[in-house]
Structure formats: structure tokens, C-alpha cells
Image (cartoon, rainbow, N blue to C red):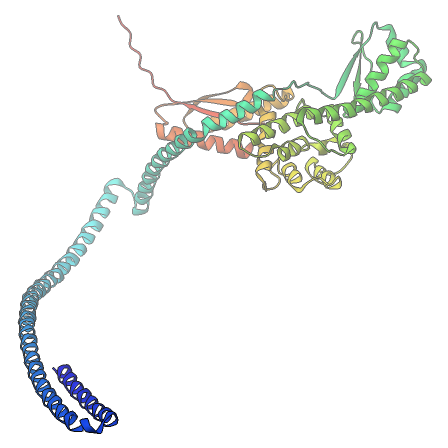
Length: 514
């Protein structure tokens, strides 16, 4: 409405302005038209006033209509809002009634709970007194004190827990085996199959065959000068006894024994046995052994594919040809460990170079003579650092016996390769006395458990079979017994590879048909 009035006023003002402009214009055009212009101006003013009055009336009517329309809409909206508020107020009143009812119920329940709590406390006291009376009566009947009864109950709970533990252990073991056995077997079988090599069994003595017994006297020489020369130049003990057609070379150093063997065989073939010739043959034998050491080191590098090795390390590798560990040739063992570690690395999608190199050098410390102090691991670490081998190679070599935690995956693969090569059937041997003592110790551990009927160490001590009494050992106890025996064997015994513990429980029923 105000907008319309403002527009009308603006229109009137504009008309007046245009009027004065017209007057001025006409004055300048011609004085003779002043009268006419004034009449026209009056007529225009009159018309303008009429138009303004008419426009003003129309604007007022429109404003009134708009106000009536807005008033109707406002009243309608107010009625709707009022109705909504009334509905909300009704709902609030209803909810308030519900809240009041619930509050009354809660208060009533609280009162009931308080009463019941008082009753429960009273009953608890009565039960406690009744329980104490029953315990006293049971103690008199069973002639057991409360502590003794508690001890009996604890023992029963322990038995129940053992059953649950055994069930859980068996379940978890089966689950773990089903997940890893298949892949582990595939990797190890492939590695062993592709790296199977021959192992020679060597001891601290070497036997040299003679064409006849007459040569024994010539080897001894006048007043024993020949045998003294041989022993002095080679550092071995020459044993000549009543055994026909053989002499025995004894030394802890296999290289010395090999030099002496070659020299004596050449002296026998030459026929001239005297101190001068003995010294000549020993020097030739030393040169031949040194050449063999170099060739064996190069063979090891060729078979494993390891390159860029310092010549001194090649010679030290070749010396391992004359070293043994439980009857297993150390050089062949090192080659096998390198190949197994390399194959496992390839199977796992890794670079086999580091694994092979660490596997080949893992026993390099055994190439030193026995008079050098230190373990073969510490000596090997110093040696590899001296010849600038990579840290990854040194870490793999350093951790192969578990002296330190493996820092790389390659170190773990070297550990696996060492275990597989050393523990596979036929790889190593023991003396008879050590072997028998180990088997006896194994059976003693098994027989020390309650409920064991018999135990047998089989598969050269790599497996133990335990037969238990079924009336004393149940199925859950059978699982725990196998686990406990395996743990005790790990803690108390030293053995290569693994020992499988089999606990057998069976019941038999026999009837006779007459």
C-alpha cells in the first residue's frame, strides 16, 4: 500500500517537473504561444491531478484488498498453529499422565525391591548359618576339615580344567596342522628332493691297506726311525698291530690323516721307504691336499652358484671337505644347506642369492684348527667381516644355531636348511654308546609318567611310542601326556632334528565262544 502511494507521489512530482520544463521551453520558442501553452499546461495539470487522484484511489483499493487477503491468510495460519499447539498440549498432557503413572509404579517397585532385599538378606543369613551347620555336619560325617574339603574340590576342579585344556590344545593343534602342514611339507620335500647329496662317514682314524704284512717292518724301519719320521712330519699316530695287512692312522685332524695316507700309499707303491723319501712324499702329499682343498672349494661355489668369493674363503671352504660333524661331511652339508635355503627363498618369492651365500658360509668357522679359541659361529662372524661380506650374509650365518634372533627372512631359511640337512635320515651318525644312552634316556622320561605301561624308542630315536593303561589315562589325559613328554624331552635332551611322541591308548574286550 505504501509502495503504491509512493509511486503516485513520484508520478505527480514527475508531472510537475515536466510542466515547468515545458513552460521554460515554450518561453524560449515563442512568446506568442505563451497563452496557449498556459492553457495547455493548466489542462495537463488538471488531467494529471485527475489521473493522480484516480491512480491514488486504485492504489488504495488494491492495498486494502491485499491487506484483507493477508489478514485472511494470517488468521487461517494462526488457526492451524493454534490447533497444532492444542494437539501438542494434549499429547504432553497424555505423556505427563503416563509419566506420573510410571513414577507411581517405579516407586511401588522400589518399595517392593527394598522389602525383597531385606527378605533376601535375612534368607542369606539363614542360608549362611544353614551352610555352616551342614559343613560342620559333613565334616563330622566325612571326618574331613573344611580345608581338606576345599583341597579335594580344588583337585577336582584341576582335573576338570585339565580336560578342558587338553580339548582346547588338541583342537588348536589340529587347526594349526591343517593350515601349515600341507605347505610346509611341499616346500621341504621339494627342497630335500632337489638337494639330495651323498654323505661320507669319517672318524678319527684312517685305515691303509698293505699288500702284505712284510711291509709293516719296512714302514717301522730300523729302530723305528721311519715311523718316527712319519709321525713327526705329519703329526699323526701310526698304529701297527697284529691286524693283518693294514695299518691305522690316528689323528683328530683329518687333513693330517689325509696327507699321511697319501704319502704312505705312494711310499708303498714306490718301494723305497727311508727318511729322505718319506719327507719327499709328505711334501708332495701336502701339495696334493692343498690343490684338492682349492678344487673342493671351487666345486662348492659351482654347485651352489655363489660368485665373487675371496680366494682365502674358497680355500677355507675346501678345508671343510676334511671336517665332519656326527659323521656328516661339513662341506657337503654346507652345499646342501645353501641349496635348500635358496630353493625355499625361490618358493617364497624372494631373491635366493643372500640365502645361498649365508647357507654356504654358515659353518665356515669349522675350517679353523682345534687350537683356535672360540665357537665356530663367532669365528665365522669374524672371518666374514674380515673379508667384507654383506651384513645380511653375516646375520644369516650368525643365527643358524639360535645364538641370536634372526634379523632377516634369509637367516630363518638358513636355520631351516641346517635343520633339514642335519636331521634327515642317514645324514648323521653317533657313536654306539651315545646312541644307546640317548634311547635309554628317552624311554626313561616316558616311563616316569603315571599310567604308562610300556614305551619304545623307534626310528633310530626319532620317534617314541608310548602305550598307556586305559583305566588310568583318559583321552584328555592322553593329549596332555604327549605334550608334557615332548616338553620334557626338549628341556632335558640334546638330539638332532625332531622326536615324534606317540601316545597310544586302546581297550580290548575278549570273549571265548564255547
